[in-house]
Amino acid sequence: MNASRTVIPKIHKTPRICLHSNEHLLVLGSRLSSAAYTAETARRIRKRLSKQRFLWAVGTFVGGGAITFHDDVQHSNLLFHSAHAGVGEANLELAIFAVQRSSRVLQALLKNMYDYRATLQYEGDESLRQANLKACHQRCADRTLRVLEENGSIFIKLGQHLSSMNYLLPLEWTQTFIPLQDKCPESSYEAIEAMFITDTGQPISSHFDDFDREPIGAASLAQVHLATMKHTGLKVAVKVQHPALQEWVPLDLALTRFTFAVLKYFFPAYDLEWLSNEMEQSLPQELDFALEGSNARLTKRHFSVIKDCPLVVPDVLWGRKRILVMDYVAGHRIDDLTYLDSNRIDRDEVSAALARIFNEMIFGDNCALHCDPHGGNIAVRYNGLRRRHNFDIILYDHGLYREIPRELKIDYAKLWLAVIDADEQSMRKYAHRVAGIVDEQFPLFASAITGRDYRIVSRSVVSGRSKEEKEVISGAMGEGMLQQLVQLLGQGESLP
Image (cartoon, rainbow, N blue to C red):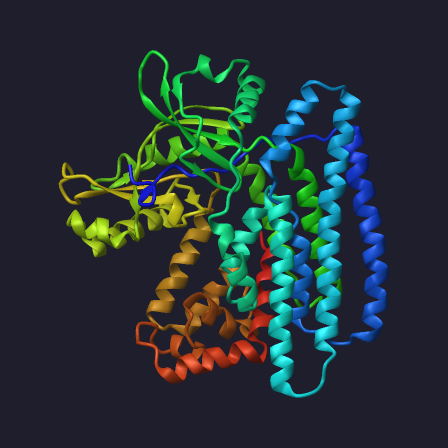
C-alpha cells in the first residue's frame, strides 16, 4: 500500500469527562486569576488604544487560542508514573501540567497583545509601517505555533482550521499554521493498551489476533490501526482516541472560551465567539465514537436503497466511547488525478456523484448531513462491477452530523433556485427565512455565499468573473466587508 496515496479512515472522538475536585479547583483558579490579570491589563491598554485594528485582535485571539496539542510522551510517562505512585502524587503531576499549559497560553496572549500594540502605534512612513506590521504578524504567528505544538490536544483542530481562514487572517498566520495539517501526534501502543483495558475490561489481544502497533494514520483527536479480528480473520480498521484528551479537553475548552472573550472585550465589532461556541457544540459529538458508529450505520442504510449511488460507508462492527472497529476500506484521495486517469475514472462523474451524495444529505428526507467532508474524509477507488459508474466514493469519519429540519431544507432549496434564476426578491425573502438576513445585510450575504459581486448575483450568477469584478471584491474586503462578515457570522449564534 502506498501510504502517500492511500486514504485511510480518519479519526476523532471521546466521552464527556468529569474533572476530579482538585482539577476543578485548579481550572477555576487558573481561569479566575488569568481573567483578573488580563482584565486589568485590558483596562490600561484601552485607555491608550481607542480604535485598534482587527489585525491586532487576531494576534490576541490566535495567540490565546494556541493552547494545545498534547505530547503523548508526557501522557505515557504520566500514565506509567501514576500506576506506580499514589493518587495524590498523580494529581499533583496533573496540576503541574495544567499550570504549564495555562501559563504558555497566557504568555503568548500577552506577548502578542503588546507586540501588536507597539507596532500599530507607529505613524511614520506607510511602506515602513506595512513592513513592520508584516514582521509583527510573523513573530506572533511563530510564537503561537510553538504554543500549539507544545500544548497539543484539541486545539490542533483549531490551528488547522485557522490555517484555512485566509479570508479573515493575515497570510503570515495562515501559512505558518499550514504544517499543523500534517503534524498530528501519535499515542503510544502502551497508552492505547491501557485505554482498551479501561474501556472494555480486556487487553487488545483479547479482541484481535493481530494488531499493528504503528498507526496507519493519525489526526488531532485519534489514530487508526490495522488489525485482524479473532475467529473471523476479518481485516479491520481500529480507530482509537488519543487517551490524553480525557485529561485536557475541559481545560482546553475553558481556555479557548477565555481567549475569545478577551478578543470580544477589546474589539466588540469583531466577535468571533461563534468559533468557540461551535467547538463546544461539536466536540462532544466528535469525541463519542459510539455515536459515530450509529451515524455511519444510519447513513449506510439510507443510501443503500438509492439506485446507482456509488457511496460506500465502511461497516461498523462495534464501538465504545473511545474505540471504533470498522471494516477496512481503503481508497485514494479524490484529487489524486494520476490515479483517476490511470483507472479511466471520469473526473466529471466523480464530481457529479459527490454533488448527488451531499445534495441528498442536505435536501433528502430522513437523512442527516455529514459536516466534515474535507479531502481526508473522502476517498475514491476503482470498481469495475458497477453498472453506471466504475468507481466507489468512500466516506469516512461520521462523528459530526447535523439534522436539518424539513422546513429549512425547503427554504434553503428555494434560496438557491432564486440565486440561479437571479430573482432578487425571492433571494431576499429566503435569505431572511434561512439565516435571518435583513435587507441591509443582503448584499454582503449574497456576495459571501456565491463569492461574487452582489450586482452580478442579481443579474446572472452563471456568468464568468471579469477582472473588474475581482478588483471590486478585493477592494471591498479592505473597506469594511471583512468586519461586516465577522459580524454576520456572529449573528448566526442567535438563530435557532
